[in-house]
Image 1 (tube, rainbow, N blue to C red):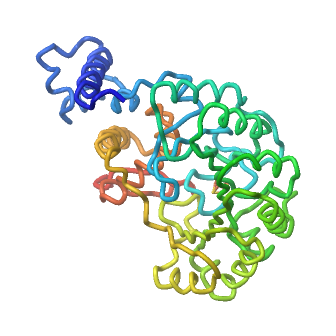
Image 2 (spheres, rainbow, N blue to C red; image 1 turned 90 degrees about the horizontal axis):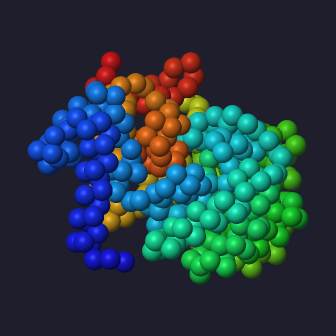
Amino acid sequence: MPPMRGRGAQIDQRRNRLYYERAGGRAKPSDRRRLFAGDFRQDLLRQGGTLRPTAVRGRSLNPAERKHIYGPVPSRRLGRSLGLDLVPYKICTYDCIYCQLGRTTHKTMERKAYVPADDVLRDLEEFLRKGGRPDYISLSGSGEPTLNADTGRLIAGIKQLTDIPVAVITNGSLLWMEEVQEELAQADLILPSLDAGDENIFQTVNRPHPELSFMRVAEGLAVFSRHYSGMVWLEVFLCAGVTDDPEQVGRIAEWAEIIHPQRIQLNTVVRPPAESQAMAVTGEKMTAAKALFAGDVDIIAGTENQAPEGHAARTLDDEAVLSLLHRRPCTPNDVAKGLDMHVNEAVKHLHHLLKAGKIRTVAKNEVMFYVPAARE
Ligand code: SF4
C-alpha cells in the first residue's frame, strides 16, 4: 500500500477535481479550498449537482466494481467485510418483518444466475489487484444470496484468486437442497438464521415463500451443519412481543442445540424494520434469552464495529446522505439509488445518522421513510 501521505494527497486532488467537474466548472479555483465545507456542498446540491459517494470516499471505484461489490464495510460479526451482491434488490425467499432493507419485492424459490459469477469475479480481481485486503469476502447483498445458481462457481473462483476467507450470510432457507449444500461446502464460514421455533412463528416473522415450511428449513440447517466442515455461526433474530418470551425462545434454543453451530449470535431490531410491529427486545430480555441457549452464545445487537480507518469516510458520506434527505424523504433504496451506493451501505449511514439524532423515521402508507430530525 502506498504511504498514507502520498495517497491522501492524490485522493484530495482527485476529489477536488471531481467536485469541480460536478459543479460544471462553476467553482473558481479559489473556491477549491472550500470544496469540503458544508456550505459549498449545499451550493453544489442547489445547483443540481449530485454528491457521489465514490468521489467523497476518494477510492477509485469504476462502475463495474460498484455493480457487484460494496465496502469493505465494518461488520458486527466479520470485521472489515467486502460484500459481494449476488441478487438484485430485493429478491428473497423470505419477507421478514424486521428486514432493514424494506419489504421483499420478488419472493421466489427460483435459483438462477441473477448476477453471473464471471462478472463478480472480474470485479473482485480488480479490487484485489488494487491492494484491497478485507478480513472476509462475504456473499450477501440485497436479498438471499444462495438463490444465485452460480454460488458454487463463484466460491471456487474466489479461492483461486485469494486466501481471504469466504463467508456466506444466508437466511438458511435453501440449505436443505443438496446442490446448495455442495456449493457452500467450499466456503469457510456460514452465517445462517433461525428466527422461529415452530411453523406459526416462522410464518409470522419470516413470511416465507409458500414452498418453504419450518420443518424443511430447520431440518435442512441441521443436516447442513452436520456435514459441513467449516464454521457455522447461527444468528437468532428476536422480536419483542413475538419471540421474546421464554417459551418461544426455548423452542428456538432446542432447534439450535440440534443444529449445533460453533457460535450462536442473538440479535434484535436495531435499524428501522420493514414493518413497524417489529420491535426491539429489551436488554434484560435478551440476557434472559441468552441463558436459555447452550454453547457459545453472544448478544450482537448494538455492537456494530466502528473501524477507525473508516470513520472519516463515514462522516463524509453521512453528510451526503443528510443532504439528500433535506431535499426529500427517502427509503434506504432511494438513498442507494440517489447517491450511487449499495443499499447495505445506505442502511449503515442511515443507522449512523439515526444514532446521532440527525434524522428520524416516518411511516407513510406503511412504508418507512427517513427525514431530517428537524423536519415537521
Ligand atoms: S432479513 Fe434477510 S432473509 Fe429476511 S427478508 Fe430481509 S434479506 Fe430476506
